[in-house]
Image (tube, rainbow, N blue to C red; front, side):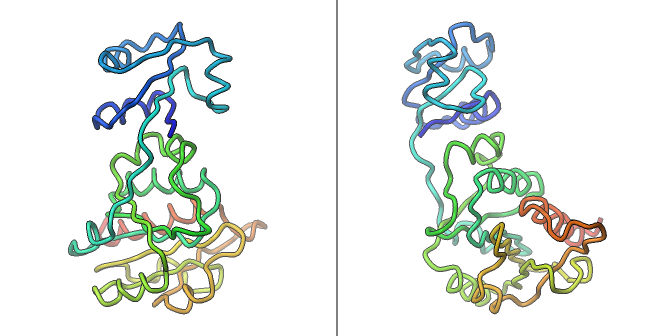
Length: 231
């Protein structure tokens, strides 16, 4: 898998991941990164050659690394007063990456995604997360509904997000909480919604009738953080 961009590369190097190779712009001048690549196979290229490898804003540095390794949900769900985020078939890698970044900034304990019909961790997701993915646990499950039932057995309250529900500020997020963010176009799937304990809605005051999934996630996540920390 390719990862690219200075911030992501720096996080990867700091976490000492297995880096197979580095493609670097021949006039690349970030000395900090170059010094950390000393023991790695480097190929210096022209910008157009880098563009052929990754057709994104690579900033002159591309690493070849192992595919992302997901964790098991039991690695992060047993903490007291835990907060996790469940993504119900998010399809846009930019949304996923932005949600990861917000989760890391807010101190969320982990993210759960389904194996099917959901964007997986790829180069774009990692780039948009600006390296935050190195500090967030992400688990991948076969069935979201079964996972939600398992979380309930562990003492979690499941808070879904939808346009029709209780205003998000009127919901109690204290204790173990799982926040469900639905698909960009269709929202939460029917069975997932039916298994939520609460449905949180964000009031729409203007003419826009919905928010981007990552923006909505950020609003709910930070209300949860505010309540749990009594800010």
